[in-house]
View 1 (cartoon, rainbow, N blue to C red):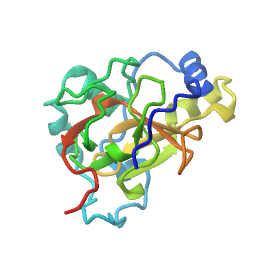
View 2 (tube, rainbow, N blue to C red; view 1 turned 120 degrees about the vertical axis):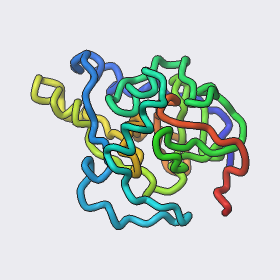
View 3 (cartoon, helix red, strand yellow; view 1 turned 180 degrees about the vertical axis):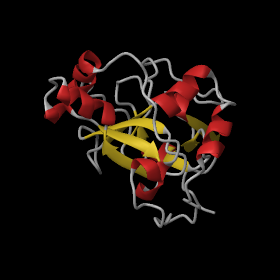
Length: 202
């Protein structure tokens, strides 16, 4: 079911507060998903995809083929400017065509165009991943550091990672549309768009 573009709420206050408290220097992320969230090696994909984490060397080798911004988003959690993002193969953040948004480093299908909607934030937004097991959600480590510097804990965001590559994708918020009420606010630069059937039939 395609959500027709309700815009609605302004971007979460956490965006602004995190920007105030976050140190400008990019941070290094684990190069493998199970380094970020231990105990996830046996997770299965309901669509039959191999969720075995990539090795650190494999991740870095794939990252060498990316542009500097794309590499910075995936490996250092840099955030692309709103209303400017493009996938690694050139699709705009607001592209409305049918297909799948896959991890730039892993090629793992992450989000379907059928779950994409216009959040008004300027970043690709989805109300759910293709399979919850294709991503990892965790408290944002940079925000946890900001708590030590005085940011209220209630503004700690939930970071979303590609389960196979461990790449940073964006954050998820509780201000999305039905049926989940979630807003997966992603960076286009961390993904590749694959045109075609968004249903994931194999």
